[in-house]
Amino acid sequence: MRLLAAFAMLLAIAGTPTSASAHAALISVEPASGSILASAPKAVELRFNEAVTPGAIQLIDGAGRARDDARVTTSGEAITVAMPADLPKGTAVVSYRVISQDGHPVAGSVIFSIGAPTATQPRANADGRLSAVIWLSRIGLYLGLFVGVGGVFFGRWIAWSMAGMDVPRAALLLGLPSAAVSLGVLGLDLLGLPLAAIVTAAPWTIAFATSAGLASIVAIAAMLLALMALSRVWYARALAVVAFIGVGLSLAMTGHAATASPEVLTRPAVFVHGLAVAFWIGALTPLAALLTKPTPAVLPLLNRFSRIAVPVVAALALTGLVLAIIQLEKPAALVETTYGLILSVKLVLVLFLLALAALNRYRLTPALVKDRGVATVLKRSILLECATALGIFAVVAGWRFTPPPRTMVAETPLAIHIHTDKAMFQVLVSPGKAGVDDFVLQLMTGEATPLQAKEASLTLSLPERGIEPMERDAELGPDGYWHVRKVELPFAGRWHVRIDALVTDFEKITLEDDLEVAPP
Image (cartoon, rainbow, N blue to C red; front, side, top):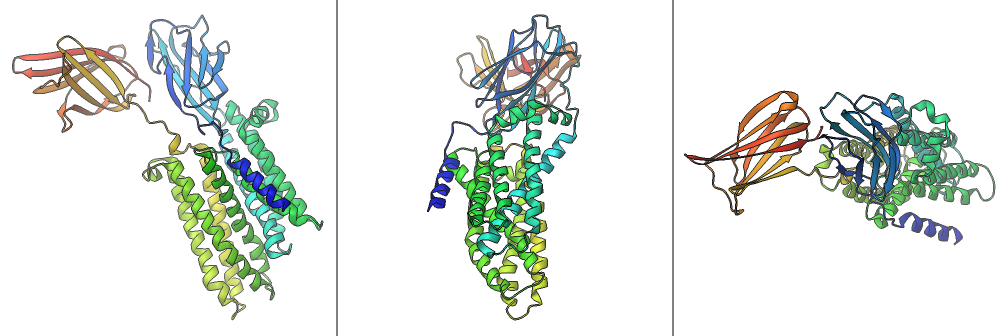
């Protein structure tokens, strides 16, 4: 009863919602990125969709120098970077790396020019090995939690035997340092530091301050308890179940899926999903070891495991579906986003894993009653399940580098309003960045009624970059607006916009204004 009470308490903790929006996204910048200013701004304000913690904020001035005299302050969802008084003319870059409330870094750059633009660029990450270490350490962590802890739980509670524990023990010994390294490289990523800085205190300090810090402690504790459960102490079964619960708890404490809204649903879903994975995957290597030299006790064990696995796999599929719907928001995200593509590959591998499990459950296990030679085939099938599970871990570890579609803030079209006593023109530019853009022109009279025009054209120029006026004819769409599609804007900056509307054969209305186009 005490174990059940502890289980309920831990599940309640995992399911307790917080005020986090789960993954930060930049929603506004002042001054706007790509702006050309007459004088240096006093400050650059970055506003996010949730409260964030500054990781690394760097200013590179128009002379290409990295400045360390820019003061950074935070207030709720906003980060303000005070500019030094002696900021020279040219293009300045404010590179930011902030920590969202799910413990992941959000990075980007804001570019603005004082006077004429220059070729200043954000500095690239000098150590490309960091991403590889992050990926490998996560795979090692998954092996420790799912293969290691799950294997020990299988031995203590399903097989009632510690036979075949060599692989789970090795997975635990790999998972423990992987959990520690995973936390250290998270700190490096949050601060934008190279791999060599892992021996310093700064990355560890900031990583422990995130939700991933406590989650890592729980994961390490779970793996240590599982190692202790391998011994012959009388309370080994209790250690195994507490370690098993720790797997789900550590996963439900941090990450994209666990911190998605509504957390009262997503955290328990991640908790149950993690336990289901540990139960299923943890059983594979011990079963394969037992089938090497099958005994009469193996068949009852296989039947017992199969009966329990059916509802476990059902829970795995249901929670996975719920989390996928929340993360993707729309089916098209499966192929339109990197996160969705990773999920698509995972689903293919999971379907293959389910097919192998069904083969083992409904064909090979019953055949073992009549023919003990089937044990070799069953073992090979289980080993193939192990290899597929490893592939899933490798694929899922890639989610660390891409935000889920639900966190992607939709780009608001760039808009300008040109107004005279005679006419009003509304111009929408999507996405409003250097590259290929679509223009939508709404033509109205001075009284804000639709302006009937026979023809309309759009003329764009960027004098500061030597781009002379280029004219494009607009087409009247069924929505009543004039459209100019796939306009190539090669540079960011203040583009001059001229719209000509031919009202009659003898009357043409021309309105002009400037448009700030952001960098790509």
